Image (tube, rainbow, N blue to C red; front, side, top):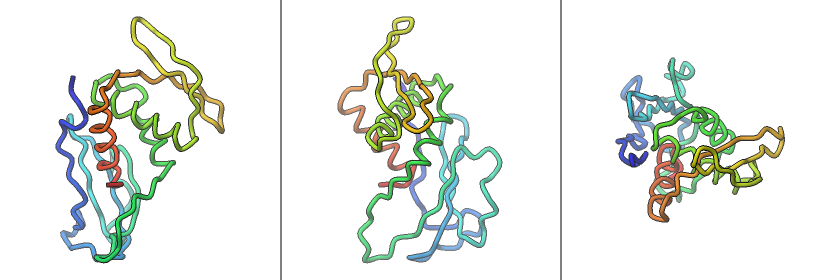
Length: 164
């Protein structure tokens, strides 16, 4: 099974991808997540270099570079989680199914999605979920991850979204 953790995803560089300038503590930055083949590439931009998401961006968000003495605490962006969840909807690659499954579990935990039931379709177990606000139903493949695999994929989700 190919895991999302098999991908080499660049961590936050604290450097603007457009200008090469170091991002200063406390400075606002923008990040775009790009798909390049089987990889997800993170591009960070300074405010002055940001012109909106690059064409083909998988996702994008903004944040502030933590100050040196500031404890880094993840700020969960539920809208970003939902965006990732929707963009992965028709993916069939095992690593993307794993990633979407973990994102779905996080959305359940954040009370954006509600678990309805488990269904089996063509020998594949799926979670039937309902969006709390819209009522829309989703089916998410349960990849039957081991606890270690679950922790690895969750860490990758946090890393990709800049929450680690």
